[in-house]
Length: 76
Image 1: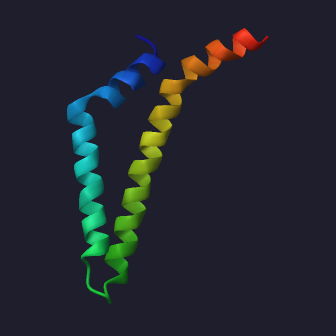
Image 2: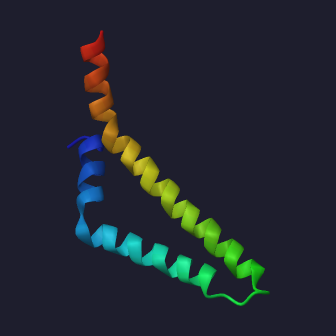
């Protein structure tokens, strides 16, 4: 199994995606339910939330790589 296939399997894994969504929800709750003066908590939560989003984007890019390469060869 190559990297692209492994990435697709990971993104389609219900358990993994449930963990990711739960973690994102935790950080969203930290942001929206924090006290007005708790800026540091919101900033840290936002950084962590964005890190998860970037990780998922990276995995998605790897998953899409094979499709991009296949289309690239069809064009030429």
